Image (tube, rainbow, N blue to C red; front, side):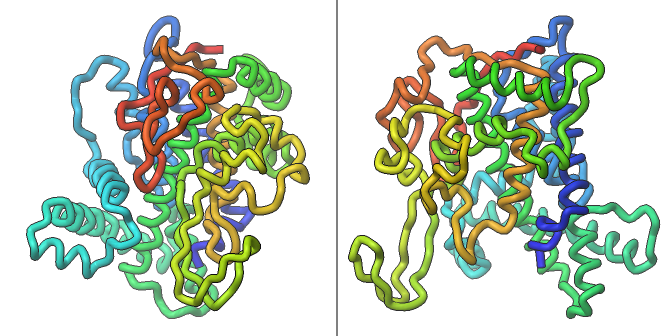
Length: 398
């Protein structure tokens, strides 16, 4: 049922408007941070806070205060903690889940780990209970608003799920089930999108010619100066942001948010290479390795958005950042749209350059390891790609 809002044109349009508006808030905070508007900062941190604000608004109309935090940090506020408790809990949760490998963290595992005194599982259980307490109160208030046909009920994912359930005559979603859907969207939708944005901005900073081509497209589609506008759902649907989309696709080829997919074999089968599989076998598929296989991608370590100029040139099942088949990511269309619109908004307003002298482009540093590239992008993988030491770039207003 959670799939419906992410395939509905009505909801996608609402979500697109939110996405572009909030990305504009980030560039406005940057521009107003000094007379010049030039910012040197951990861009990965800023876009993490942006995407959490976006997913909070899209999922249940909640303001995490991410842009306020960015504004304070640029003004030299030394406050380390988050002003919002739910943001603090979400950040702790994503950190724990990444380090502990999410697939095996069940309620039973959390309970057993707590009884055994495992500090990480004990803390994770406490964080989840705290998040539930806040979300359950919001769910209760929202059910009441929908039940009373309150004209001020927010149009978001939570409301849509409650309404779909009522319209289709389904048994009532329990608060726990609603919580699970919402917190899954929060976990999957903000960190992965943020890290894709950060990696895209890093690659654009290393390839000025790519940034120039993106800006040319954006100025053509969105206009220049005071007469410009924000990118919209209609731009996405019409394919007007073609090259910007190519940049996102190339970023996901080289740096898929999820490096490994785990699947269980349903019945005995033989893979194309002749390898025999038995029902019940567990298969690991690496989107990271697939995207760097020279047989499918010539010069695989070169960042080249032109690979995606024509979709028919991409061999089937060689670009799989969202998986494939019946277990493919339900929110893949929303994720792509959201990432493209945020990247378009940011690059329309700002240009980027690296500030670390020994940073090199991906094709100059072509010996990857599971972690930071030597001399290249400072990333690592746990459950998702991340920047443990940040991703510092200089952003200059266009």
